[in-house]
Amino acid sequence: MGSFIEFKKVFVIRGARKILDDINLEIDSDENVVIMGPNGSGKSVFIKLLTGKFYPSYTGNNTVCKLFGFKRWNIEDLRSMLGIVTSELQYDFHNKITGFDVVLSGFFSSIGIFNHHIVTKRMLKKSDDIIEFLEVSSLKHKKFKTMSSGESRRFLIARALVNNPKVLILDEPFNSLDIASCVKFYNIMRKILSYGTKIILVTHSVSDVIPETNRFIFFKNGKVFADGKRTEVFNSDKLSSLFELKVKLYENNSSYIILR
Ligand SMILES: Nc1ncnc2c1ncn2[C@@H]1O[C@H](COP(=O)(O)OP(=O)(O)O)[C@@H](O)[C@H]1O
Ligand SMILES: [Mg+2]
Image (tube, rainbow, N blue to C red):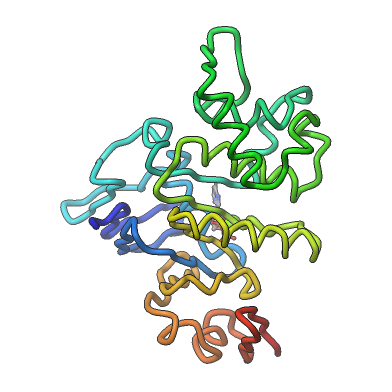
């Protein structure tokens, strides 16, 4: 399959700082990828280039910045190909919306359901099916804003999945989840993968890594610091250089921990 992300010589500059510095990356829509790096290394800015919240700072002759082959795109128009879930999204919804309507709004790429939306039976059924798939049916009438982080994140993922995207990008989906919610969420991610959707997981933590991933892209100081297969990149030496701290990576039964 072709590259869905094709970036060459991409920079994002703020003031005198290159917050993304000469990014050269190609990612296929048939691979699962982990994007890892310390806080502030540029991971979320990279994702915001895809959502249109950031643009490359200048485009020289050699710059390529394409998503699914498009040089310019509206991320909403690509929703059947790509779903992006960030934790910021959860703050955009109004106080009264239910979990179910959050999911339904995925069909319209809107932040809520409004009078002009034409909701079909197919949309209602699909929303119900995905909510069941993500194991949150008992919460669908609950107000989204009163849900725990783990619950609301699952509804946001369901919202992205109603459009059957080929690829799902999750930016720090484990943030602020307690250990039980992490385990639940981890299993949900693996369930999504088992149905063929590819996941690009953006994280600062090795414990979030899913065993199905074979490509690791490390960001450091706004640059791609390493990019390769699991055996080449996801090891104690590379992680020590990435975090500038001598660490050891342990694997136990497909779970990872890092020790100083
Ligand atoms: N809107 C912005 N304006 C200026 N600098 C920003 C902006 N957003 C992020 N940055 C800076 O870009 C760097 C990378 O941020 P970010 O991509 O959010 O890091 P992370 O890898 O933790 O996701 C940080 O130093 C951050 O302060
Ligand atoms: Mg981030």
